[in-house]
Length: 154
Image 1 (tube, rainbow, N blue to C red):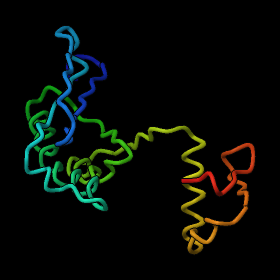
Image 2 (image 1 turned 180 degrees about the horizontal axis):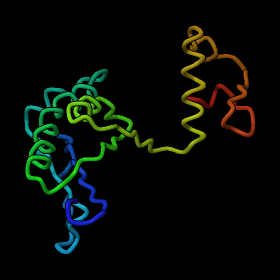
Image 3 (image 1 turned 90 degrees about the vertical axis):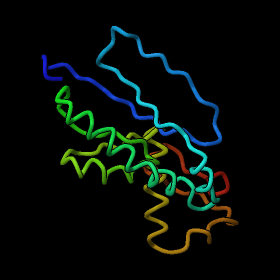
Image 4 (image 1 turned 180 degrees about the vertical axis):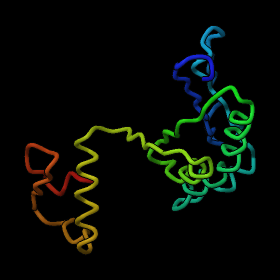
């Protein structure tokens, strides 16, 4: 914010076409927290496919987010410091790059889960990890105290 060294946060919400509209009430006295709703359109229902839905949905909303942030910056009321994006919205990094600000990823699970994802990804880079699927094997995942049976992994 221009007047002072206060932090203000704008949360931009991309509404899924199949979810009921949520009502968010922003207190009038709280100018430092703002919610901006991107309305869901019938057009976004056409993006629903089993394999690419999240990717296509986020890509479809990049232009909307770019326009919203551009209007905020042009108004002169804010100094844009960066983007914090959900782990499913990493593609919004392109929008942050357009404004020359950093992107921070908010991971919605605990550190152990993140460590497991890194471990599984590293194993995937070494070869086909589905070979472990039917084995009675326990993996020494560094972010877990105990070894993890392969059969309980997603």
